[in-house]
Structures are given as C-alpha cells and as structure tokens.
Image 1: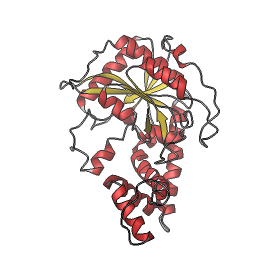
Image 2: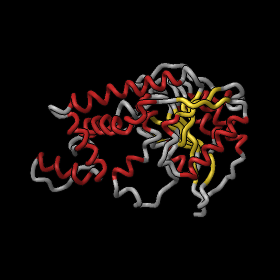
Image 3: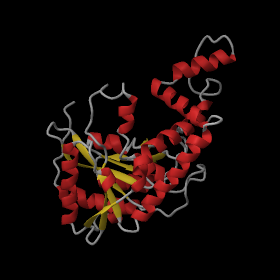
Image 4: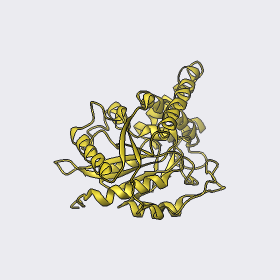
Amino acid sequence: TGTDTGGSIRQPAALCGVVGMKPTYGRVSRYGLVAFASSLDQIGPFTRDVEDCAILMNVIAGYDPRESTSVPAEVPDYRQYLTRGIDGWTVGIPKEYFIEGIDPEVMTAVRKAIAVIEGLGARCIEISLPHTVYCLAVYYIVAPAEASSNLARYDGVKYGFRAPESRDLLDMYKKSRSAGFGAEVKRRIMLGTYVLSSGYYDAYYKKASQVRALIKRDFDEAFQRCDVILTPTTPTPAFRIGEKTDDPLQMYLSDILTISTNLAGIPGISVPCGFTQGGLPIGLQLLAGHFEEAKLFQIAAAYEKHANLEKRRPTL
C-alpha cells in the first residue's frame, strides 16, 4: 500500500505499469500514518492487476474507530463487480484534461483506451470541470499549510530524528529539523507557514478552501451526467532520475491530472493502458463519485480484460 495525497499512488502506478487506487477520503483507515496533509491523505493499494486490487481493498476498507476521518460506510465485496461489464454506461471525458502539453504518446494510448471502452457498450461524452485550472494553485496552498502544522511535531523531543550534540533546546530544534527534513519538505513547510501567517491567511488559505469547494461541486455535477470520468493519469511517461527533481515547478506540474481527486475526496484508480515506443508504461485514470469504488473496479476490470495489453517486466 501507499499514501495518495495528490497522486502518490496513481502516478507511480502509471509510471511502473501496475494498478494503483486512491479510495474515497475516509474509506480506508489512516491509523498509524505519518500525516502530510490531513484533509487530502488517503491510504490505498498498488497491485499487479485489478482483481488483486479488489481483493486487497476488501481487506483494508472499512470503519476504524481509532481514526477520526474513518467513515462508517458499508463496504461491498468488490470482487462481485469484476465480471459485470459496462454496457449502457456513460463515461465522461473532461475537456480540461485533454490539453496541449500532454505527451502525444500518452494521448494516443488514452484515445485507444476510450475506443476499447466504447466497444464494450459504454457511451463516452465530453464534460467540463471548469475549476480544474485552479487545482494546482489550490493544492499547493492547502497541502503545504497542513504539512507545516502536521510536521511541527517532529522537533527531536518526543520521537523521530534527534540531532546530537545540541547546546540547548532551541539549538536541538534547529539542528533536528534542519538535518531531519529534505529540501522539498523544508520548502513545503516554509510555504505552508507563510500562507497561514497573519495577514496572509485570508488572502491565500481561506480563498483556496473556497475554490476547493467549487472543485468538488464540479465533480458532483459531472457525476449527475456520467457514471465515471476518464483521463490520463500523468501528462508524461516516466522521466529520468534527476530530470525534474531539481526543478520544483516541473515536479509540481506532474500532479496536474491527479490532485483534483484528492481535493474533491473522490476515489480514483490508475490502470495500465499501453507503452511508449521506448517501452515506458502509460496509465489510464478512472474516477467515480464518493464511495463508488465498485464502479471503478467494474470498468477497470472490463477494460483490462478486453484491452489485450502486453504484459512486460523489466530486466533487473
């Protein structure tokens, strides 16, 4: 399993050619998790195929009284949905997710997946999620703000890393947090502290929270027209080590297709949908309404069965 705050299950699943699911917020207990952004974090599985994902979700989903965000909603046997098919379904294709900047090979693979799904009896229609344009900005206000609060506890006093040879308590705080956090974590803590500070809370965090509600409303309205939503999982295939990690803005842009799911609290699944000419995996993302993971398993299993994709394993 992994934790998906803005795509950290679905994106690596897409880049590695496996299945990854982010369940509905509150569907799987986060008890024991080191929190990053409490209103976004959700635990979910990585698996080789859709059936394994359904089996694992049967085990981990459900109410946990030890975890405050856990929801006491009934959990169906997801395996029952793996053979039902999608004839008569309506699949929404959001125009905001098929834009310039998506890698051409990713776009081609996803278009082929749409054709397969239409061949299974589903009707694919264009929909709009108009506030998508604000998702990246909202996410990188909300997530760092919550991270700066959650990670404040890692000061070397009660648990976690403690720097040796400190002169006094303040020196221990400084050394422990300087040595214990990486550059990206420090960057997000600083950004979060800034947007929560006096004079900036209303200008940034409050407005971001208001726009987040509009993003959720977009999905609620879209699911009145369609059963599920289909998009690419990532805008590009896997990049080389170090290619983007030295450029934070480029790294953040990799989240552009997945963060809306976390902001809205809905479930999403990434399934393999092909390879680039260079042999890199490509992922297809499917989204459903709150607590409708069963729909995702139903369409993902139908697609997986009929896509006839080649199974490849890397030479290690």
